Image 1 (cartoon, rainbow, N blue to C red):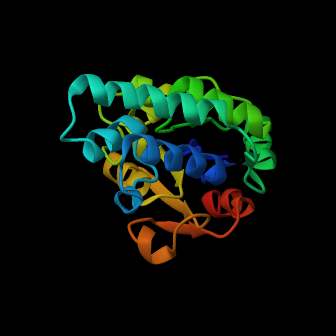
Image 2: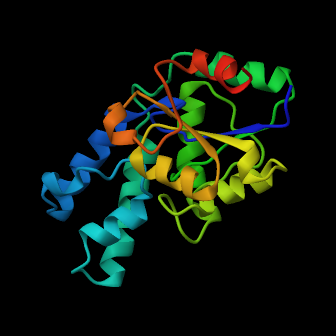
Length: 208
């Protein structure tokens, strides 16, 4: 097979964590007195970046305390978290064929580990989490680093994403981007190069 690799987003791409995420953020919004409507459009953006935007009028110490709080709420609630259909088979097939892949997520490492474990997916070597970068999605840094960690250039990598911020990040990094239509409409992901209704479509598309 060609010398290409795959960089997968986690939430909404490999793992369905939406119910748990919504529970955590609704609780935080109540505790921190943040209007729920302000949280629209934050999917795919690191929690700390989101909270700095939502709480820009608060002190640094208060912001940090809410960052710690959302990390706790999200990590401790894994109820209902499951692999996206096709995810396990896809990752197993890539590994079987010795095709390099990893996860590039806006989650912190502990949160990512808790979610992949709950979904029954193995955390890959060389993953990229919020802890590894200075600038999260939609900045290109996460996917540039992901490509480096699997030994490839960004233009050799396919990014698999479900969120506008991630699609923008992958495109800005110079990767080929396939948007999986699990959480957003095609029109919201229009920067992507390809669209997937199901993860089973990826390998035939990439190696056509």
